[in-house]
Image (cartoon, rainbow, N blue to C red; front, side, top):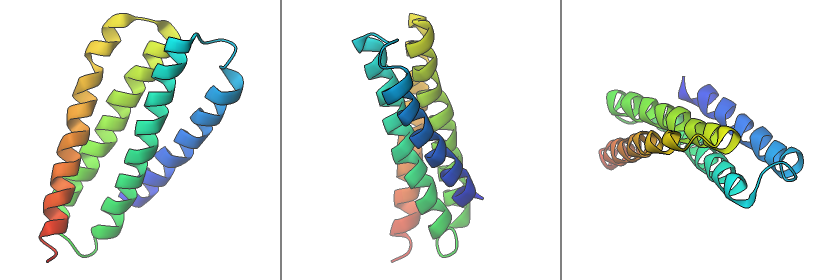
Length: 120
């Protein structure tokens, strides 16, 4: 399940990155462009993490990996999603929600680490 989700989020990260580089460069100020790029970067890296979850799910603890994949997916939606919204709308309070996605990313990495350690 997490392989196709990772591929989808990865595709979307490339598309959003290209859109930002070509379609938004004249519309966004430096701050908004930086916020947008951070959203794309974190989405891309965590799409790769979802691919790792999908690959390891055949040989490692499936329950931990399920939670890890869900944490990465939730993190992408909340962390990157709020950054995209912040860049477009400049609604500052959205920045207060972003750390929830960051914590979700950290939880995903811890669970992925535990599951991969158990492979030994």
